[in-house]
Image (cartoon, rainbow, N blue to C red; front, side, top):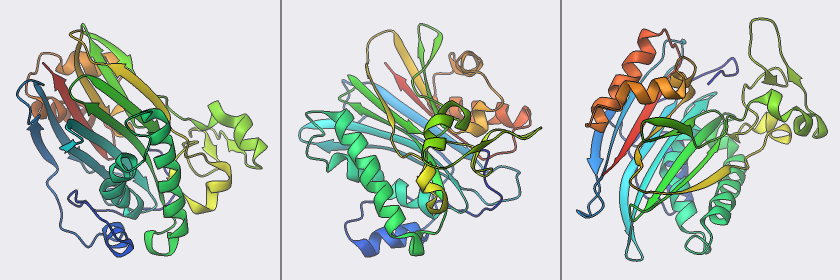
Length: 298
């Protein structure tokens, strides 16, 4: 994302944490690094769902601050596909914490199976509260998020805060599932909270002249003027849905939704598709970290 003037990062492997100590360890990167490319598939032969991911460190002069989740879990006799991209700023501790804990928090919500929208919003809120309460360990930075939960290969629940994006390909056409939370679009809310939005020549709009998104996890110094409320969308998965692209803004800064879909719609291997998208973004001179997950159905 377009970021405040500070940085730092690394990646760690997904794992379940149950204690405050484990949560803070994950936040300060005490777990081992994970590969930046890979793939997997649904464990249920009837679901026929597969995914691939590829992450590339940018050339903006800071370490990698993007993290991803791409895994499958069994819960209450259901198979869940869990996918996410977290794009950090002012360090990697907040996105690292999110990678290890956000989905746990969502699935532990008592209303998840009755009302996923409410559960996801509650979990985003409580997760943000934890990050702010533990800013001494997790640092002053923040992160955007785009998350996707696939239930039994039939239902897709997508949520986001910030400018990472989910785009679905339906019959060859791109359909954006998420909302880019740009400061100028939420100027009234920000000003009502006592903040302001700057738009300087040659730059993007920024909250209080600093952050180029209006919603994010963390960011203690800006929190009074930022929101952690996600936009949540439910999409039934049918035969018209070919694949979904989740990607950080390092991709979307240089590529339109339909261009991304057209680039990979004939690539059946989702890992190869994710790599193709990141490679093209680099060729188009994207300098930000670029993270991409492709989820293919059928």
